[in-house]
Length: 90
Image (cartoon, rainbow, N blue to C red; front, side, top):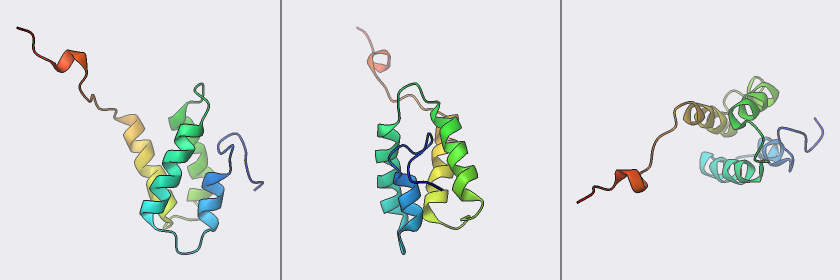
């Protein structure tokens, strides 16, 4: 694996798998940074699936694999968080 590719342009996910003793909270922070740096035209769910193929099979118990799986589930089930339609009118 070469650091930085189409699924992980800055190599953040790659590096997270190389950090000994990394915890789930650190992986969540890295995941957020990774997600915010993706180009807008990327299909996030497809990209996460690609990362799981790259890393998840060889590292099933790694905290980043868990975070990626959670991110994939969250992408599949979006939630509405309010906004102008949630307000009642008089």
